[in-house]
Image 1 (cartoon, helix red, strand yellow):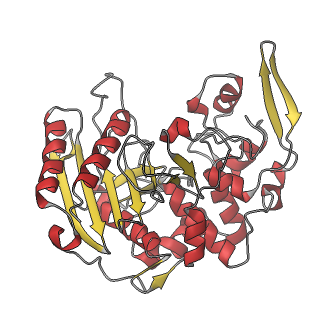
Image 2 (cartoon, rainbow, N blue to C red; image 1 turned 45 degrees about the vertical axis):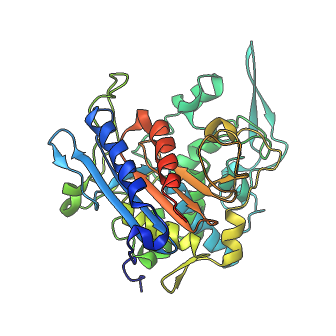
Length: 395
């Protein structure tokens, strides 16, 4: 049984300044009127209640259809935390260990090789150890995203067409197993296809497609009724779209086709969702693994997921900036300072390449999500949103 609809409150009842929230809306309205942003949905909840939901601009800039609070967005890499939660549910059931080698579930990943690049080309050397499930969750597997570099290893991923949609998750993992790692497992944080492979591990353990695993374990129990790997025909009128061309570069913008169930159910970036659904997921985490009487995870498991798992392992600052580590599916703030936006030590977050972002701040009992489809502008608007949300905390 799914939890009841999320409780709501007036901003002042949960310590939010209405004046500052009006300032947040005004700032994003200016950005929309300047044609750098098609439209947004923003949601803030505190102390277990939703106190702010705003929809601004156009849901579809081509048709001019107005943004609505229930608009459906491509959340891309915000898929990763959802898959990570499903994986940790299997850990709690004794069906998976973080220390397990990946090859226990996907034998093709046994004896991985690491690329050593030099002026004369690429040499392949045996990895110092195998990839573990923990490596997949914290992005220390050595697997990469081909679009994040242009050296020989990245080119091999591109040539192997690892991103193609006309493949199964099994096909995708099999292709990756033939390619060299960029780093020895456990030695470097690098954003890559780790969570896609983790999704395949879930399929192997559960004996069913990833979409079914997520629906059974996370989406249906939490009442995330609008989250999935495609949008039903009856709901396509709610899909948020980007500008045809990037307003800053003039380059064409291409996003996932949401109309048909994809063959490749990308655990790293394939889901669509809404602000309300994202809020349910975040509030479950803030609640120590439960929401409205529905428990997905134990409190200590959530604590483990949202703790830093990198220590001295370098690399994450390339994505997060200073002051962050990485847990099991989320970036984790290590200190109140160092970062360039407000926040609290213990805050955790992640975002998607098309412009979406969420975070949970346990100290402030705060969750916030910003949904937009503006790939090129995402970093600016994430920082703007964080500043304005934290400015609204009145007590």
